[in-house]
Image (tube, rainbow, N blue to C red; front, side, top):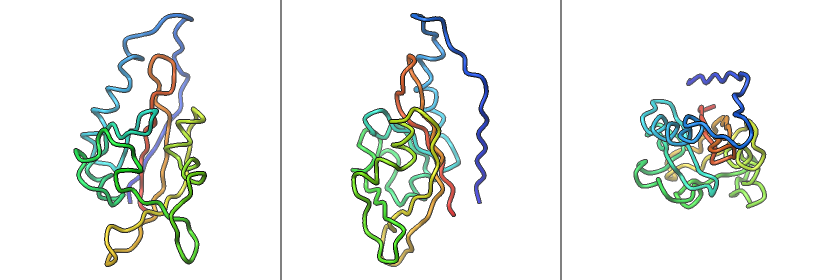
Length: 152
């Protein structure tokens, strides 16, 4: 099973009215990192469009190839989320707003939760994944969210 560790440290806060080159390019650096990652991970922008996704992330989430998802809204790319009831149904829009990648966008804080992913075919079983999301800042504002997944 994959193991994800996050550490929190004192955030560097530039003086009011200034921006650093590192902060401005933060989103671009994460995009490149996620694209090459071995771990299942996903980066979406503030409009929930997929910016980058690892190949293992596509496999775990029952999605197509990474290049087919980039630039499209996360939920339009084939991701089907189910509730945890005995007779699973797709999540409502209100429930989707509470999944970790979306919650990290709206709250600007770390978010974690379980997701039930509908299998790609009827022969496969639905997947349950643990998702840990963090907002990604650019120019001092939330520009997207970075999520790491681990199958449960």
